[in-house]
Image (cartoon, rainbow, N blue to C red; front, side, top):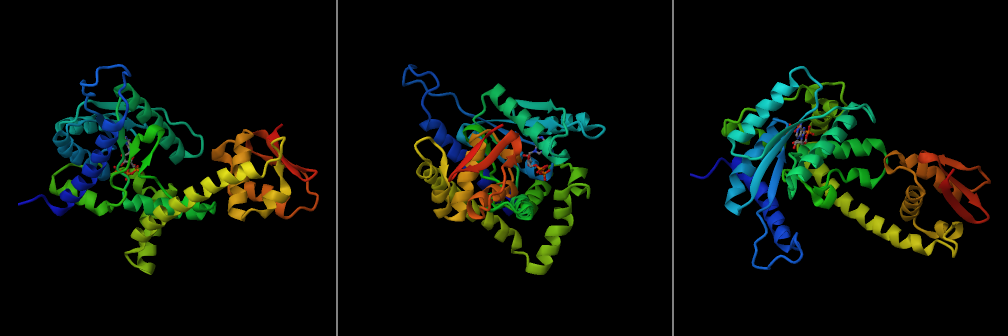
Length: 345
Ligand SMILES: Nc1ncnc2c1ncn2[C@@H]1O[C@H](COP(=O)(O)OP(=O)(O)OP(=O)(O)O)[C@@H](O)[C@H]1O
């Protein structure tokens, strides 16, 4: 008898990602350029980022099962955010469970969570910094994350509510981070499947109280928002939102690339943006050109919002002699004699 369907599903999702990694690994140029060609590169190491929750425990179990069959080494990392009493002991428990699955090396990394951008963003920043460091320390080819289709649906809704365009509707990428380090094998898998896979494999899981804490936006969306949407629109809404993410990502990528090409055509010989040429661009392309120019001038991408760009855009499309626009990073945009000047100071 084969494995339970939920276990088969998580293993298949991980196997696909491991296959991709192996293919990339064998295509990559040798780390030592003049090494004799008969020397095989060492087998790649893949780490699982594990909180001890159902999604990442299911991921860890599937990685432990699939990796030896492909000659891949598998390890794990758990991050202790230090936000709850006893979090260090829980992290040690996660380490224990990962070792019991046969993963090696397994690290527990304690981080200090700052305050920048709110508690959720600060914890995420600290976590990714710790995962990056762990991946580099071990020379890992990839770090697997347990985000599911439900997480993706939540991310799309959060992006929609921000009102900042299709890039924020495109959710999380299956591959992201420096050199494509982060992989999300469960992005097309629902949370219930991961939970079920843990249950039938008798894997103990830890339910993070933050996930149910109404103080957090994502928790409210998870507990109240999505269930209400499913009630109103039907169960298919999660899948539809995940599809929206995939389609929006392709659209956003295409528009970004169009804007990259358009930017060169709207600059004069001195490199200044010509307002008349900007005006002639489709609004979606023009706004992207303006965003690129603001970032190139020193505006931090993370604090440059759609409303900033809309204001700069009005210097082109709603010109009535208005003054300079102040942007984050002390960047100023002003219109001068048919040119748009965006620079710091
Ligand atoms: N403390 C942590 N240590 C290591 N990895 C983490 C930690 N918290 C989250 N991750 C990684 O990020 C993914 C998404 O985390 P998030 O908190 O959004 O979801 P979650 O529902 O808590 O996930 P899980 O059920 O796996 O705990 C996790 O599946 C895991 O891969």
